[in-house]
Length: 168
Image (cartoon, rainbow, N blue to C red; front, side, top):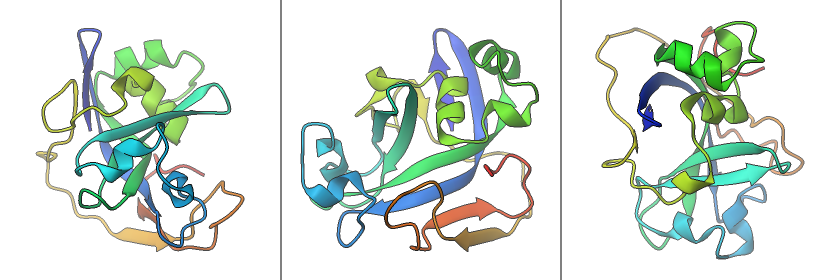
Protein backbone atom coordinates (compact mmCIF):
# COMPACT_ATOMS: atom_id res chain seq x y z
CA UNK A 1 0.00 0.00 0.00
CA UNK A 2 1.46 3.36 -1.01
CA UNK A 3 0.27 6.81 -0.01
CA UNK A 4 1.38 10.11 -1.51
CA UNK A 5 -0.41 12.54 0.77
CA UNK A 6 0.70 16.05 1.75
CA UNK A 7 3.71 15.70 -0.55
CA UNK A 8 5.07 12.72 1.41
CA UNK A 9 5.42 9.13 0.23
CA UNK A 10 4.69 6.47 2.80
CA UNK A 11 4.23 2.79 2.14
CA UNK A 12 3.88 -0.55 3.79
CA UNK A 13 3.53 -4.21 3.10
CA UNK A 14 0.00 -5.38 3.90
CA UNK A 15 0.38 -8.08 6.57
CA UNK A 16 -3.17 -8.43 7.92
CA UNK A 17 -6.66 -8.10 6.43
CA UNK A 18 -10.26 -9.07 7.14
CA UNK A 19 -12.95 -9.79 4.57
CA UNK A 20 -16.50 -8.40 4.86
CA UNK A 21 -19.27 -9.78 2.67
CA UNK A 22 -22.76 -8.39 2.34
CA UNK A 23 -24.65 -11.68 2.21
CA UNK A 24 -24.89 -13.55 5.50
CA UNK A 25 -22.22 -11.42 7.18
CA UNK A 26 -23.72 -9.51 10.10
CA UNK A 27 -20.50 -7.54 10.67
CA UNK A 28 -20.46 -6.08 7.16
CA UNK A 29 -21.67 -2.51 6.79
CA UNK A 30 -23.28 -3.64 3.53
CA UNK A 31 -25.38 -6.37 5.23
CA UNK A 32 -28.05 -3.82 6.12
CA UNK A 33 -28.36 -2.62 2.54
CA UNK A 34 -27.03 0.26 0.49
CA UNK A 35 -26.79 3.64 2.23
CA UNK A 36 -24.98 6.84 1.20
CA UNK A 37 -22.11 5.76 3.50
CA UNK A 38 -21.79 2.23 2.08
CA UNK A 39 -22.73 2.80 -1.58
CA UNK A 40 -19.09 2.62 -2.70
CA UNK A 41 -19.05 -1.08 -1.78
CA UNK A 42 -21.47 -1.84 -4.64
CA UNK A 43 -19.20 -0.12 -7.15
CA UNK A 44 -16.34 -1.63 -9.09
CA UNK A 45 -13.46 -3.28 -7.22
CA UNK A 46 -10.26 -1.39 -6.49
CA UNK A 47 -11.78 1.61 -4.74
CA UNK A 48 -11.27 2.72 -1.13
CA UNK A 49 -14.07 2.53 1.41
CA UNK A 50 -12.96 4.75 4.30
CA UNK A 51 -15.09 5.40 7.36
CA UNK A 52 -14.79 6.75 10.88
CA UNK A 53 -15.27 4.51 13.93
CA UNK A 54 -15.76 5.58 17.53
CA UNK A 55 -15.79 9.16 16.24
CA UNK A 56 -11.99 9.21 16.09
CA UNK A 57 -10.36 6.42 14.03
CA UNK A 58 -10.44 5.96 10.28
CA UNK A 59 -10.58 2.49 8.77
CA UNK A 60 -9.77 1.70 5.16
CA UNK A 61 -11.21 -1.11 3.09
CA UNK A 62 -10.60 -2.08 -0.50
CA UNK A 63 -13.76 -2.82 -2.49
CA UNK A 64 -13.25 -6.36 -3.75
CA UNK A 65 -16.43 -7.78 -5.25
CA UNK A 66 -17.69 -7.26 -8.81
CA UNK A 67 -19.77 -4.16 -9.42
CA UNK A 68 -23.30 -4.63 -8.10
CA UNK A 69 -22.24 -7.03 -5.34
CA UNK A 70 -20.97 -5.49 -2.11
CA UNK A 71 -17.82 -6.81 -0.49
CA UNK A 72 -14.58 -5.37 0.79
CA UNK A 73 -11.35 -6.17 2.57
CA UNK A 74 -10.35 -4.20 5.66
CA UNK A 75 -6.66 -3.34 5.93
CA UNK A 76 -5.79 -4.27 9.53
CA UNK A 77 -2.00 -3.88 9.58
CA UNK A 78 0.99 -2.99 7.43
CA UNK A 79 4.71 -3.37 7.88
CA UNK A 80 6.15 0.13 7.28
CA UNK A 81 8.56 0.24 4.34
CA UNK A 82 8.95 3.87 3.20
CA UNK A 83 8.45 7.23 4.90
CA UNK A 84 8.84 5.96 8.44
CA UNK A 85 9.80 9.41 9.77
CA UNK A 86 6.61 10.85 8.28
CA UNK A 87 4.61 8.02 9.85
CA UNK A 88 6.22 8.80 13.21
CA UNK A 89 5.22 12.47 12.83
CA UNK A 90 1.65 11.43 12.05
CA UNK A 91 1.62 8.96 14.99
CA UNK A 92 3.72 10.66 17.71
CA UNK A 93 2.29 8.42 20.45
CA UNK A 94 3.76 5.29 18.83
CA UNK A 95 6.75 4.29 20.92
CA UNK A 96 8.07 1.66 18.48
CA UNK A 97 8.07 1.08 14.73
CA UNK A 98 5.63 -1.80 15.28
CA UNK A 99 3.13 0.51 16.98
CA UNK A 100 3.03 2.79 13.93
CA UNK A 101 0.70 0.56 11.93
CA UNK A 102 -0.30 -2.62 13.80
CA UNK A 103 -4.03 -1.91 13.74
CA UNK A 104 -6.60 -0.50 11.31
CA UNK A 105 -6.78 2.99 12.86
CA UNK A 106 -3.04 3.14 13.33
CA UNK A 107 -2.22 2.28 9.74
CA UNK A 108 -4.60 4.88 8.31
CA UNK A 109 -3.10 7.54 10.59
CA UNK A 110 0.44 6.50 9.61
CA UNK A 111 -0.45 6.68 5.90
CA UNK A 112 -2.39 9.94 6.30
CA UNK A 113 -5.71 8.39 5.20
CA UNK A 114 -8.98 10.04 6.24
CA UNK A 115 -12.54 10.50 4.97
CA UNK A 116 -11.43 12.59 2.00
CA UNK A 117 -9.93 9.38 0.57
CA UNK A 118 -13.24 7.51 0.56
CA UNK A 119 -14.24 6.33 -2.93
CA UNK A 120 -10.73 6.94 -4.26
CA UNK A 121 -9.61 4.74 -7.17
CA UNK A 122 -6.63 2.79 -5.80
CA UNK A 123 -5.20 2.22 -9.25
CA UNK A 124 -4.66 5.88 -10.11
CA UNK A 125 -4.68 8.26 -7.16
CA UNK A 126 -2.68 9.43 -4.16
CA UNK A 127 -3.35 6.03 -2.57
CA UNK A 128 -2.49 2.95 -4.56
CA UNK A 129 -1.69 -0.72 -4.39
CA UNK A 130 1.39 -2.17 -6.00
CA UNK A 131 3.57 -5.24 -5.86
CA UNK A 132 6.36 -5.18 -3.31
CA UNK A 133 9.64 -5.58 -5.18
CA UNK A 134 11.50 -7.57 -2.53
CA UNK A 135 10.69 -11.26 -2.76
CA UNK A 136 9.88 -12.80 0.61
CA UNK A 137 8.81 -16.24 1.67
CA UNK A 138 5.97 -16.25 4.19
CA UNK A 139 2.95 -18.25 5.26
CA UNK A 140 -0.52 -16.76 5.33
CA UNK A 141 -2.71 -17.82 8.25
CA UNK A 142 -6.48 -17.65 8.52
CA UNK A 143 -8.53 -17.11 11.66
CA UNK A 144 -11.75 -15.70 13.01
CA UNK A 145 -12.03 -11.93 12.85
CA UNK A 146 -11.22 -9.91 15.95
CA UNK A 147 -12.76 -6.94 17.74
CA UNK A 148 -16.35 -7.48 16.60
CA UNK A 149 -19.62 -7.96 18.44
CA UNK A 150 -21.21 -10.09 15.69
CA UNK A 151 -19.83 -12.25 12.90
CA UNK A 152 -16.78 -12.82 15.08
CA UNK A 153 -16.71 -16.57 14.40
CA UNK A 154 -16.32 -16.25 10.63
CA UNK A 155 -12.80 -17.22 9.45
CA UNK A 156 -12.25 -14.11 7.33
CA UNK A 157 -9.06 -12.74 8.92
CA UNK A 158 -5.82 -13.33 7.03
CA UNK A 159 -2.35 -12.48 8.29
CA UNK A 160 1.32 -13.16 7.67
CA UNK A 161 2.49 -15.79 10.13
CA UNK A 162 4.98 -14.52 12.74
CA UNK A 163 5.07 -10.99 11.33
CA UNK A 164 5.52 -8.62 14.30
CA UNK A 165 3.36 -5.92 12.68
CA UNK A 166 0.18 -8.03 12.82
CA UNK A 167 -2.30 -6.57 15.33
CA UNK A 168 -2.93 -8.28 18.66
